[in-house]
Length: 238
Image 1 (cartoon, helix red, strand yellow):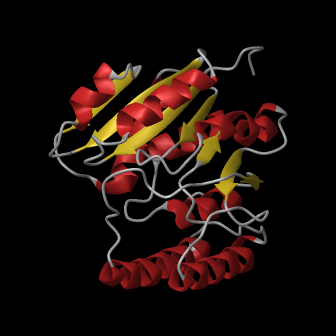
Image 2: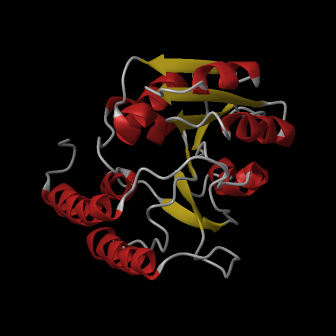
């Protein structure tokens, strides 16, 4: 890896005009060497205009809503095409603290792992979650441990970092629907390593979550089935 690695933050955004500028500005305050690409996922508000005015390195305006999987693959394609060494995912709603970026990418810079997940549960933090969310986390964590042999206590976290090998892999394939848990299986099955890093997270700063109670049930079933299917695929088949 270069002495000064090229680092990109990918921000998938859907109707996040109320928080996107603050997120971009906080990332820029961490380091002048970090680029930011906002993937506008078919927003109906002023997300694109606000992101550009806030100084994002690039804003990719998708013609319609692809969902988090399509938005993130677009970001990884951008990272791969522009030869970034590390690509991070940070949510547009202000939940993630950009000042944790150095901590999240450090194990990758040291060559210890290929992928990191910013976790609310590795250490005790101030973050509070609902009982239903905690149950879901436990189920997904046990499923990941059973399938991959690796431990991840916060498998749905959207604060992540990838090295060049993972960037290339995700540029070529990325799960479409609720991908956070499934990608950990793909990483592990290719002999790559991931690690959780303790971070603080806040409540979203603006807007509202797209995950409704009904969608939560669908999410649990869909992700569980996707992980099991991924585990039974032959190595290299996507």
